[in-house]
Amino acid sequence: MSNELRNFLAIPYDELEELNLKAKEQRKTRVRFDQIQEERLRYLTDEKRIKAVTVLFSDLEGRLHMLDYDKKFLLRSYDNLTFDGSSIRGFTAQRESDLRLGIDWSAFYWAPADIFGAGKILVFGDVIDKGGSTYTADIRGMFKQWADELFKAEGFTLNAANEIEGFLFEGPDAERRYNETGKFNYVNTGGYYHSLPGDPLRTFIDTTAEVQRAMGFQNEKDHPEVAPSQFEINYSYGEAVAAADQIQLYKLICRQVATKMGYTASFLPKPVVGVNGSGMHTNVSVSKGGKNIFWDAKGEEKLAKAAWEFLDRILTHGNDICLLLNASVNAYRRLDPHFEAPNQIKASPVDRGSMIRIPIGNEKTSRVEVRSVSPDANPYLVMYSVFRTGLQGEISKIKNLRQAERYLPDNIYTAIDNFLASEWTTQLLGADVKGRYADLKKASADRCPRLLGTFVKTPEVQYHHDVYNQYLWNLF
Image (cartoon, rainbow, N blue to C red; front, side):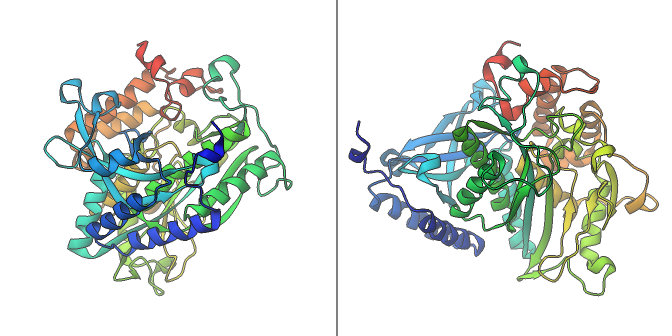
């Protein structure tokens, strides 16, 4: 069919940015849900060139799922979007398979037609159980509910920005074909901050940054990272649930752009031994009444007491929540002290081997940086565990807590044991979801060699949740 006969929505990038920034501001200022819902429904009704709405949600491991609903159907049935939860790993058993998606109208994105297709809108959804409550294995919904309750009770707004590293490899299916090739091929070997204009890595970074800008990310800087073919594209702070949504979109955009270029964007924490791995440094702060409560011009390192207590709680529970921040077998390759890896349960303004760094900041930017997070972790679990631990966890009596000789696990089995033994993780997730999550992590671990060794094993890639291959899983 001729393309000119398809009168589907395709908006120029500068107009996309205006639309997405307006929606972002509504979300930031907490415009009432019913007001935003009415506005979005009216827009979808009036804009005849939209053919479908893509609803996004994440499973327990953080794998992003997408359902396309015909726009006319969605407008009739948006309050009763049922789906089969038994098909989602970590969700409900078959006998309890009926779940519903609730539309989070504030998390509404206009996407570039050349990347996502014309005539489509993206929106995040919350998973709802049969009783009408937030489904407990939908960590996005649970985190959003907790953050809203915290705002109402304490006036706290949770803020986050993530520095997400990844690799660009040759071929559109480099991860899926790893069992055949046994290696990843770089597209660039320039190194930190260096690539020639127009080379494959620079073109990928530029294109991805353009898409992010159009989708309201408010970019800050982008550059090649330390390892060959490694990249990082930074964007501004946001409210923590929105920031976690942006992590999912960031990875989706990177993968989509890479595929269109004939490459693979990989977020394996350590796809290549012998070079730096990829992290997801998570910068967090808390504000109240528009004021950053982590800032104190007279405090140690210019941090307020509230920030130091936040940091101390995370150090106290560092081993408890390690599995939530480093969720895969491959992630423990990255926690290698020879490559600036943050494997020490310490806090420091300068030592990049510490789990927590205290960046230079001012009244607006004062923050705590949790460096031990891997880019394949469930972003909602990361945000939820970091913020709830920092605000509501315990502070240990360990002598010299911030500089004690304590280390994160060097393998996933120890991390699973720590996670299961922890009372705090039961408080975080509840016994049922905690058990499901541990079972998923153990299933992945049991398909891999117990000892990491000096080269990346095929099962680390094949059974990695970001490279989900349902057929392979069903063979077991």
